[in-house]
Length: 386
Image (spheres, rainbow, N blue to C red):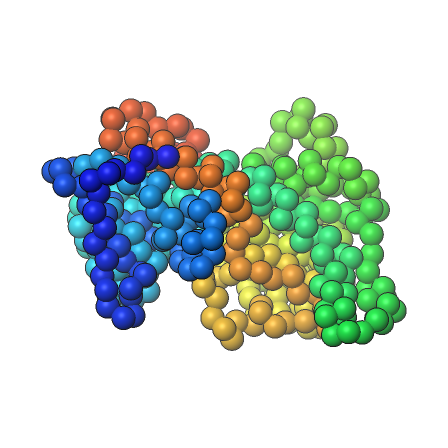
């Protein structure tokens, strides 16, 4: 963690609407760089839990001698702190859990911007083509969320397959209709489970499924797993996506969002799913057509849909995924975007951001696996570049 400077001063914008939104942390010495960080508000939880490092309140780990930090949650619209301060920022720190959407238009205004750092994994909230054009480096903390998200995927599968949420709601209501729950509850054992994407997260999902004695584990990916990795989980690759989903009882999405995956799971693809299949998406909400998913769940073609990612974040209160149900009144396992921001994950990505910044200021090479966009070119195939 960055040490907290004894002579650092905090300047807060004390307008009634933003008393907690924007804080500028300055060192009395000459500033070297202007760094803008867009994080989510922790409110009372951040006060009670100092390990909530991804919040505006617990931002001390960002403080570095000689640099100016503007830390805010205000990110929407032209009057937001994000859009006001991006024009002077040399470094932008964002998070997938409260994304500041850096569009091509904003890149045109961000004349001083040199580095974008994602505190976590997933940089699709940044226009990466614009970053290439403007020679702005984009890095993320690869691997910081893989265990956290993989565990969330397994939990979500079990919630859906075992019909857990409606069962808990029965208890909350003071009822006890076992038959209403059991009629749509199954075992994961004996099912065919497949992952769209078998990278760092997708493969860990496959590893965690092995003890469940599923009938078969499948994966769909543009690249085949190494033979040793395939043998370890006994997974079979299916190269045609429609054929893949038609074989699965449970499908989990673990691929990045890019031009090739946006809207990938649409009404046409859903028609190839097994009737009554379960779908888990902890990748990105925009990979799925929200209305097509809601329609498939309502009709019973999908038995359940679970995840923590939404096509817009925070999700509007009237977002259809908040309230959609299957014909039996269950099948919704949606939660806020938090699978990759557990306290353990926050410690990992906070340390990762610290390392990236230190390398940047010391002119040291960055870890290759963290680089999404280098100086004017992509350094990864994860976002659709082949």
